[in-house]
Length: 346
Image (tube, rainbow, N blue to C red):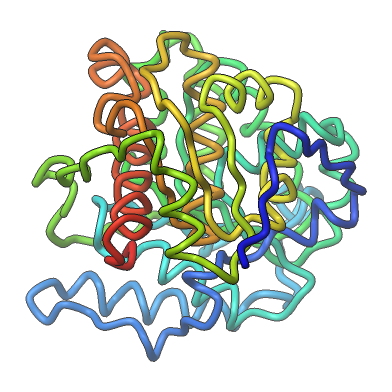
């Protein structure tokens, strides 16, 4: 018999140790390696990325002429303290980054760009620097700058970690020098953006961008009256989180995004009543974080109301955060398809 819980009744208290324990590759990339990556023979940059990252993994934890005083008084370094994989969606950048994390010695951290900014919000900037400076490797997936505050924040964080000798690895579909374009007056923050780009050796990973095919077709929302009975019958041994969409959205504003992973700790299936279009940008961005954590954990979704293709307004889908929103819609749609008809989200 299914167990019923409610996310709106859950407010996780998370210690620093518990927060940091979550900085590892998600379930989907829990056992990947360089050997399980399959480079496209038509795209030599993919095989080259494997070679570069293998060499980079071997350098993690080894002393170098890096660090603040090495940079101030030592000889000019031939290799940078970080590596940056630039490329479109669907070319395996996260797979490669997770493979690097698995291959390198610890202590080490793996998280999305948003998770690191949320970590700073939860701990404070100085405590985050103090904690991550003890790591040998920090991996940043989906590196992107969405506002001036993040630009200054991540510029300082990366610089201080690099000065402490921490190896950095990042993925993005935007070159370091172009971070922030289209979102704010990036020209006003060229110093911070230049500082970021100077931390990394950039490698372009070419390949087909699967997201250019557009959003996958969303499954038709279910009849609200049948929602819970369908979920209980389909997942009889699972823990179902059953919530009204509006109530869940309101509750997310009371839980720091750094704790969304713990918010979903017991959830195996999400049942959402009356999904509706989000019209507030701050609410939408919080839901994007929840979508990422649901996808990381591979939580099937069974929902009524509007399809996830209508979750965000047309203005949002065409605005400066469109990459985030397209990713969220794609992931939520895949999880809804898995929940309703059994197709596993990839």
